[in-house]
Length: 406
Image 1 (tube, one colour):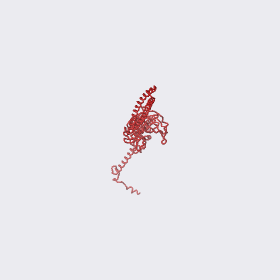
Image 2 (cartoon, rainbow, N blue to C red):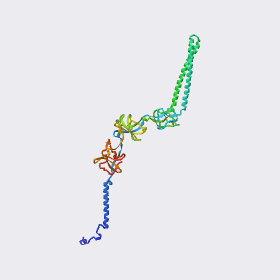
Image 3 (cartoon, rainbow, N blue to C red):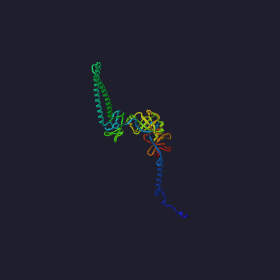
Image 4 (cartoon, rainbow, N blue to C red):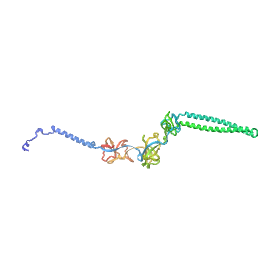
């Protein structure tokens, strides 16, 4: 380029940049915005807001029973009464009354229901009247025998002294023999009628349905006006009137896998938990190992009896049974607050857990925490139901954002 022309080029005073000029202010504001954005991003990153979530698994702090530590294996089953009956009538007829309801407690021999029995009662009364007449006939025959015996003795004496004719003696002897035969016949007739009366009374008793043992009525299967028959043989007839069970014979029938059967033994201590009573544990012992297997499920039935029955325990309740390696002392029956030891980790010189608060992991130190089997006892540092990180990764820090895996 021409040097002369270059030398003539210059910036006018109006175009010079000054800090107070409008153009300078326009350049300053974008710079400040950029600085603030960078500072905010740096602060957000350091606080974890822009960091990616750490995927973790979770567990909960909860009540732990000491039996969980000494459990050999578990099995499920149901509460079953070992003594139960579907009480039916041996006679056929229409129910005239039902004396019980569901839940009624009855004693052995108590009346449960009655069947209309006018016909069998009439038959019994008829036989009873015939028996009374037969007994009167026996009395008359015995009187006749007594008279005939005296006449026979008197005529025998006179005939021996030739004081009466032979025909009179023979008539007296025949009368005596007939009277004795009449007495024997009357006695036999009485025995027949007594047997008939017992049969009639049995038939009347068939119309009264009684409890076969002490127990509780579980269901009422027939009501007044319905026809009942033995084994439900009649059309539209009911077989069982009530179903009842002896609640003192309740046991848990648990299905134990064949692979665990070698660990079960008679009188082995157990702990039973009912689904309907989750906060209560019941102690018991193995009462019987049924000597047969269910090949379709690969299980063997084991019956567990309760050490002490509770009135809240009812037949057909579902139950879970823990088979223990040793009996539970009285002091170990109460639960304690615990968390699985896989949730415990070390950060620096302290042992603790990461509590889940929203989407953050918060470090909670547990100095001097005791352990019991697979559980750590957090004491008052944590509450029942709080969630903690299970097997926390080494890079996890307090305040880190987390995502709980399903």
